[in-house]
Image 1 (cartoon, rainbow, N blue to C red):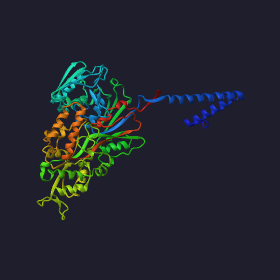
Image 2: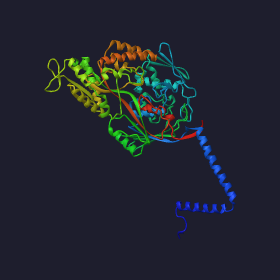
Image 3: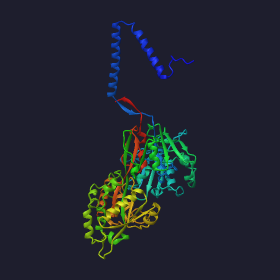
Image 4: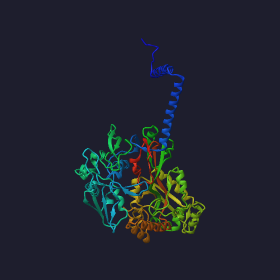
Length: 586
């Protein structure tokens, strides 16, 4: 039979227990005299006061420091295929994960400065700039029970695999004609044929464990299961992979690498979940299936507003969007510098940034971006970067282009309507920017014909053969500001990256001298001179600079990020991220 007088849940039992405690306290208090009660009360007040005083004093003489614990879950669009630094550049998801799992000889810090990673110190560079000697940290250990040491043979194996065409690494060209010598177990020498200030950045590539990969042939390299079971010397290592019914990877969990040379990471666990589209990613965030995500803004629907539970970090990428001018395809108008300048001055960059990108990108002014070596502070004030609609019209009048009252378009001296073609790919923001440019240029009387192509057709039919008049495109210039691959006249033909017809003997000489000099001061001086020549010629019209918007939960502390080379570099300091804290004396 149910006893209706007894407690039937935890709340009732707690009330009963408390009532009994109060009753017993009253019984015991009656045993003390009035003087004894006052004494006990005084002692109790003194005890509480001492505890409060101690706590206040301890807090004033202590600081909060990170401690291990906590987990973080992030969403990514795409599928991991090769968590392998030799193949990862072809896939953003692979690049993200490889950045966490592997470590290189050097790494970039938050200000894009190269600092030692697996290397004990920065390389010693020979007087002629052709030899780089690197010494590894002592006692580097690969993860695993075997406790195998990471040595120069692992580094040499990695570089030789990159150089081997059978491995099909996208990094091969960067390591072409480089000799790697293993001086001893911890010392290596890299020998290049010509002095190059840009070579040192190659030493950030992740190092592979020779003992795991040496028996995998080049033809089997990309197919090996080891690509999803990576062993690296980075701050985290893969712990668990969860797959769906069709074999797709749904999530990957990582745990701290206990052998990491810079010490154990604070976070206990990282989890990455994978989605087919950005829409799915955003939905997962709003459904609290993931805690963080990042993206390059291209659609207003993707924007996530900052809030108390979220920290939104905007990371500048070394990537600009520009209109590249090929004057050879239509030399009558485009060969005139006044026409090129008029095109530039009639572009309202702020309107593009606001209307199309929702103020989620920055302005671009020239071939070297702000914050990079040799950036010229006066470039934003150059005529090509000043929006001046009336000034643009005046330049066209001076060039002999007059407006036809019947059509509103300009005609040349032979009474022909001058038409320019603009081509870009079908990526949503490029299409919208192209439409905006068409309106801006037609407002000063220049007729524009738009061509919207698939990325593949744009590459094959227009960019490689240089078959365009105006090309709207984006370029990532990397960590080093070296403009040689993008603007030297020798790079005007495929596979060069100079998409314009820009060719200037003095500029060529400056670019060659700069990349062959390891002195940052000398390089910066020559790059400034190059930019002064560039803005006078106007071979391209610079529009926007890309941002990577990274959304992290507010609970994640210790994040120190600035400019990144790729989105994967947001994990450069992940070892220092933390959630839990403790107090220690100052």
